[in-house]
Image (cartoon, rainbow, N blue to C red; front, top):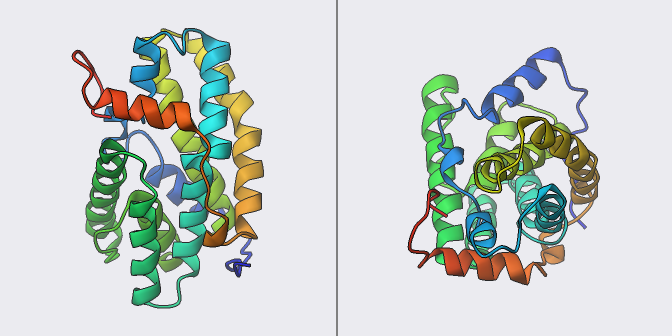
Length: 223
């Protein structure tokens, strides 16, 4: 079982730092990635608000969301560089498609570069969840809050994709984020007590959609 990081009480500064890091305004380019959702919408698999919620909930609970939460926790708790590298290698290995690997790699690079320039944190070149976990540790940010906000940002980005493509109304989109937020919290809390031995994914339709997106003729998003 994983050893959870320090259970620090969040301060206003902690919350504001994480809000900045995980905001759509933070220049990592998250808006360019749909995680395969664009292909699912293009094929009619996801066509309304209810189907969007079901799709994102499944990815959060049974796919990349759960796994990335474990990678955030493992990176935060890594005792040395070798352990951190092993976490990153595992994160790359669990990318089901080439586009998933591109997505997490480029997001991680962008986050590392910007955060180094602003906070002077040398994060290296890691995948996105590993970079987030490492940065949170170096800044002494609360691990649980970091994991919750990371998952909510991931879900919010997918909702933003669906808003453009389904399409969803702005109010429906915000309602959807509100409905997904408790699930983000539940997954984050479970991840604190889990280890990389509990990595798993059963989101086969999402994985297939990501594969299909690689050869999709007309598309807006990179993944």
